[in-house]
Image (tube, rainbow over all chains, first blue to last red; front, side, top):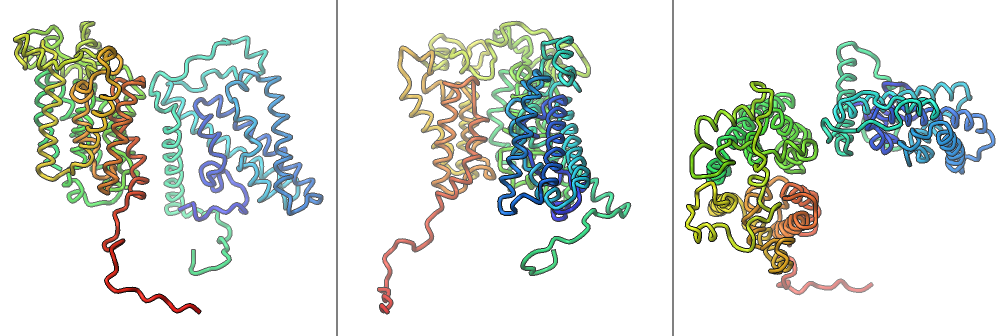
Length: 236
Length: 348
């Protein structure tokens, strides 16, 4: 079971500490947006960008942030960056912004971001924080891309449809402005229950590979220290 | 579990008589795939095959699932649905006794949401469409047509069927309200048409009566308790009587239509009474049946689906844990007068 090994204080890694597949944080945008790869990629990149920017800011300001009020500071900082990003997306990537909808403003309360700020950026130098946020953000992007390509392929039979949405809006308009039809193959995969089922299967696959790696290849588990508890009644 | 399958026999025989051998092909295909998948899932979970396969629960799931599908459905449709029912809905939740939802209806609803066109397309042999008292539905030609519909590997082009087929053999007559104000059985008798002739539109009434007989057999054998079927049927009767007006039966349908012109009987006796996913206490079962009856009627009349047994049963499954929590039977002796007067503690 990798769930027991999860510890937010651990250094961020793509595989052992993936925000979606192991920590199960920030799931609502993941489940809602992952109907097409382009949407998943757009939201993943935005979230990673905000993760890096706010990590650096928190890390630089950590001397002046009051410890008791740190979450208010974290939220304010991420909200500032999210608002900026929202406006920039509307300016340069308006078709993509229309597709993502409410989930761009919601990045500011994504707990995959806030956990990194609390666990790492608040106590580390900014160079280390950039690395940490970048690794976590790429884990977020990777999980989103895998899940959304599964859903898009099963649901619509396409991959990377409407890729022109990732270009700046003026270039995207040069291609078809009509977005191609979504669905038509196995429509259930585009609905939310299928997102839950497929995410569950992805997590199960990840755990299966993980246990295989540990038993057959005797790789380290990634857990550098055991979880400490206030009251220990037995070994965990 | 085998008794449940035995109780299905009259209904299955009746629908085979009207809709051809495709009904039986559905059941055989679904049952074989269900048993194979069940064996695979048990093997993966490290359970003993012989003990767990012998409970025949996969067989019952397969039979109910196959009855719900249009006859002569393609094999891949059955395979996707039965895979979802057995592997995802049943075994990933912990196997028999742990599944929150009715596996057969989950598989059916998955297909209805994903492939609405295939799920409303009835592959009836040509003889059944053209009507008349001939026996072409069960003849060799009809048999061949049903098999090519089920196994499209042999014949990639879809069989062209007459346009009238949708009007005649839609999932239930509810969508057309064809039966009007009175019973088609009585109308056929008045018109002097044989009840079992395929031109008399009595098919769904007879199929429902056959399932009612099967359900009464289950009640007699005490496989199911009376609470769920009686409360479902009573709810549907009461609410459809309330909304029924002779001038507007085209909108709301008659109570008789809601009971016998649809899938009510198989839903009430066979599907909603699944002992795992239904409520378990007696009072809970009555509320469970009432909820299912209300949802069935609401979706039929105000919803966009012609019939709604599957959605209603899944909705009931959602409610079942809460119903069991609120309808716990009273502990023995609770509330009765104490024989000895309890000594009150001295006030300090």
